[in-house]
View (cartoon, rainbow, N blue to C red):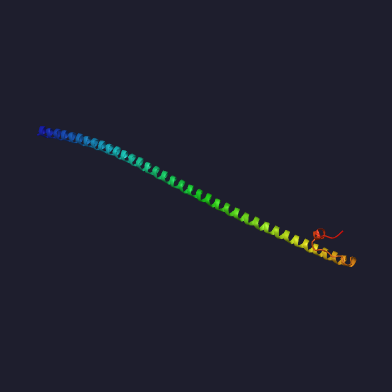
Length: 153
């Protein structure tokens, strides 16, 4: 019995040893499978990251292009506003110049009217003084009329 027990023990030890080797082999295979799965997952994540970065770069490029287009439109609108403002300024300046010219003309007319009034007053004074000194000498309204008048000599 000793021998059968020993055979059984050896057999059990051998079976346990085989089971241990199978377990180790299964464990190693599982570790290889896990490593392979991990590599595949890392590769998938790297590809996803690359795709995400490419999509982000494309989105950034579109955003930059959109912002540049908006900036260009704003610059164009600002230029249009400046041109309109310049045109309005020119019109206002022209209107101001016309007003200044009208006021200058009005001022000159007032000066001329004043000079005319002064001349009329002087003429009246001369007429009044002249009628006192000259008996019947006729004063002509137009000084040239006297020269153009034909008088016998």
